[in-house]
Length: 399
Ligand SMILES: *[C@@H]1O[C@H](CO)[C@@H](O)[C@H](O)[C@H]1NC(C)=O
Ligand SMILES: *[C@@H]1O[C@H](CO)[C@@H](O)[C@H](O)[C@H]1NC(C)=O
Ligand SMILES: *[C@@H]1O[C@H](CO)[C@@H](O)[C@H](O)[C@H]1NC(C)=O
Ligand SMILES: *[C@@H]1O[C@H](CO)[C@@H](O)[C@H](O)[C@H]1NC(C)=O
Ligand SMILES: *[C@@H]1O[C@H](CO)[C@@H](O)[C@H](O)[C@H]1NC(C)=O
Ligand SMILES: *[C@@H]1O[C@H](CO)[C@@H](O)[C@H](O)[C@H]1NC(C)=O
Ligand SMILES: *[C@@H]1O[C@H](CO)[C@@H](O)[C@H](O)[C@H]1NC(C)=O
View 1 (spheres, rainbow, N blue to C red):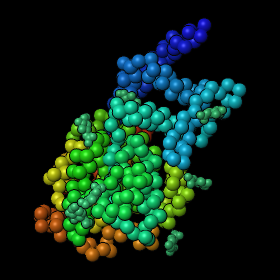
View 2 (view 1 turned 135 degrees about the horizontal axis):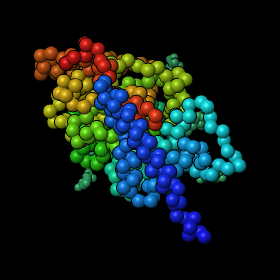
View 3 (view 1 turned 90 degrees about the horizontal axis):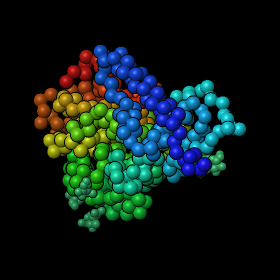
View 4 (view 1 turned 60 degrees about the vertical axis):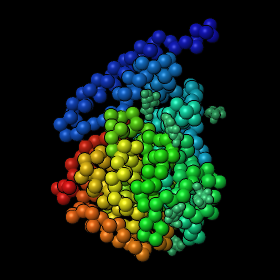
């Protein structure tokens, strides 16, 4: 009797087959609708193929996802303070919650993503897949920024094991503080303009010393949440060729004086950004996610934290015909704005270091073609599927 119950009933398999078939037909017809204007990368399709080929474990896993959408199963997903998503599935018989009318798609996208994260997490912990991203930054001791840095350390830690947080610093007290908190720490290998790290060598060092699918420098005052993990996880299964040079950037949301409570949990970051965040201009790019295949060795020796390098990098990548993707719509990047404001890189000595270097190398630099609005590929969710859509950009974006 009990042995019988443990097997997956045949009707479930039939149901799965019908469901897959209809998703397929939907995807197929929809792909044709979009074909003329955009190249659409679909993630779910690949998933279903994998599941069909896979063992019963995956099938029952997918059945759980599907049952959830017809509400016979209630899936509760919550993010704990430490940022570890926990999944609690319980049969909802007596206490059936009515399907909420407000944004059911968002709810089930969040649940599906949480399940996929949980699965991915156990695979990373088992060593069967690489972490998604080695995420690095650099700062020195600065008492005015101590809360900002503390929050960044806590926040990037909450994204482990998907993300490997790493600091480049020669400041031994900073290195010690970060590594005691669970970050990796490395010395700056090449600096310029009075000791500022040169961007490309941080990538080179990170790639040489850590295994992950993606590598990114981000400014030390940027907070992320699960949306970054979801986007990268979905991109991994998409048809975007990750063995080629890919650059992924997005707009940031400025939030003034982020408090410890606001910044130390994913949900609270989302709330603060919603209630008092301001989406900043597409001229500012604060994080640069690249694949291992991005040709960092050929990149000019620009330094971080001084203007021009961000727009130049995007411009250069577009000009070089690398895949450039704007993830503003699916990634939240909160900039912790303090009293030094939103244009810090414009106030320092050596403020034009990068520009002066670049004009010596290139005749013409169209910084304006390196703004986020000029990127013609962008991620968005449609029917719980992450897509990379091609969009039209302004004529002034030509390179
Ligand atoms: C899961 O939910 C049930 C009912 O809501 C609860 O009794 C149980 O403690 C929860 N388990 C976990 C691990 O949170
Ligand atoms: C940085 O270099 C110093 C001096 O060479 C060394 O003592 C220290 O261990 C290095 N730090 C790291 C994190 O490698
Ligand atoms: C850090 O140390 C390296 C050598 O270990 C040196 O080249 C670099 O200039 C130093 N950076 C700073 C900011 O002192
Ligand atoms: C990265 O993974 C490869 C094998 O996949 C291994 O040979 C190499 O040592 C790893 N590198 C690091 C830094 O862990
Ligand atoms: C990606 O595909 C693999 C199977 O190839 C599957 O196990 C995994 O759950 C999928 N992940 C996402 C985020 O879709
Ligand atoms: C943020 O705090 C600074 C003082 O540290 C204050 O001058 C500024 O007005 C605050 N901004 C907001 C929006 O509260
Ligand atoms: C998140 O914010 C709530 C108040 O809105 C607070 O009670 C809670 O402690 C915060 N979470 C963390 C981890 O600080």
